[in-house]
Image (tube, rainbow, N blue to C red; front, side, top):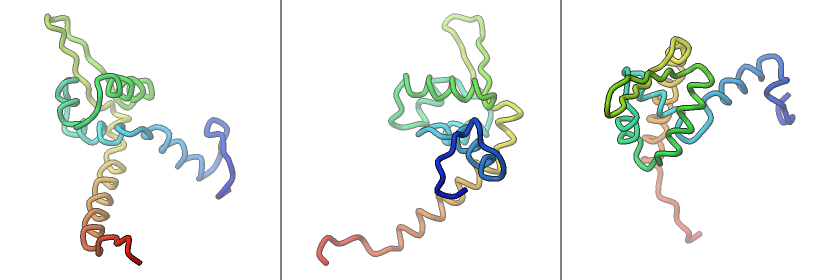
Amino acid sequence: MRGAIMNIDECEGRTCSVAVTVKLISGKWKPVILYYLLDGKLRFNELQSRLSGITHRALTLQLRELEKDGLVSRTIYPVIPPKVEYQLTDLGHSMKAIILAMYDWGSDYQKMQAKKIPFSKEV
């Protein structure tokens, strides 16, 4: 099925499993959010400060999607000022090996890239 256009909601087989996983964690910030939540509960502002460059709106949208998909839970405490914490659900924790593998692969890739000769426009 390589190269074929696929509707994720109607796919079957091995390719579907990969597509579903990618769909759940796709988004500029989702994998990094999941990575930071591996360490435990974080408040919104704590997450935002760790994610350099993310806007309030982007973080809100990514967290809502992760919550909708059952990977993250949100706890609201009835205090003033409002306190909201985010943490991984059991389903989110089940992605730990995937997230850590992505971290390891990315780290190795960065090391490989650092050893390459810089690109030269003069050829």
